[in-house]
Image 1: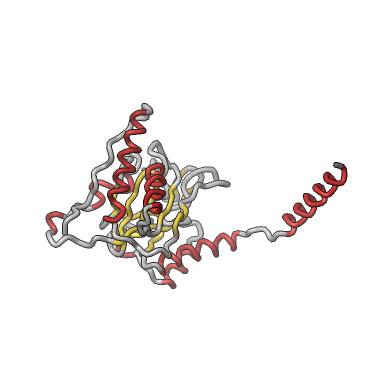
Image 2: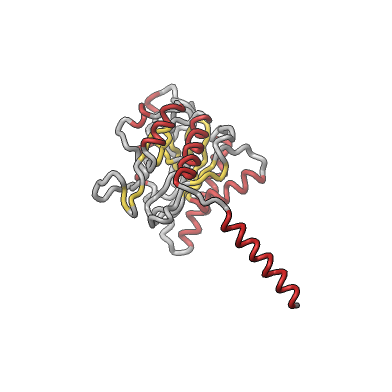
Length: 259
């Protein structure tokens, strides 16, 4: 028994020594990781633009009562500013080391945005069924609606009949996230945060948007995911209602499915 304890203590001591010898991460390391993640998104063809960032529990935009702290673009021209140019993204990342980034949807890709619990259930089912799933990111809870899961897909393009076009911002602008906890289809006129975006919170532990499946995965047709995501959202809404949690019906999809 004594020898065993001695050997355990020796192992513990060597482990402690190894941990002390490990090089500590620096701000430069974090900056390099952030830049690599952003460049990987751009390399996948998803256009990026700088966004606000958290300052404690507030937003860097300094707007009193900002409705989407650290979750909105910096410039009103974010749609035309969005780019995949490596040099420009490197300059933004280095000149604005605190900035979050958004990707403009509806040009190359769309995003199907669902409650986190529904998204996890849907992702498990899709993978089990062998459905090709593209990049997927998780956004932590940022209000009464809870966290979100973002499924990145190919864009469906602009319908031939412009009268049938429903701008995404009418039904699923990011500012409506907490009010409508069902599925939203981010298309033209909308955007989402991309990892490693940070959200408001304690300065030492800002919750972050993170990849579950990275941008190296090809973008699937959104219709291949739609039915499963709708079903998961409906189940999620029903469960919230059954729990007396003020459940909402699955949000109507802001997109005409016919071309």
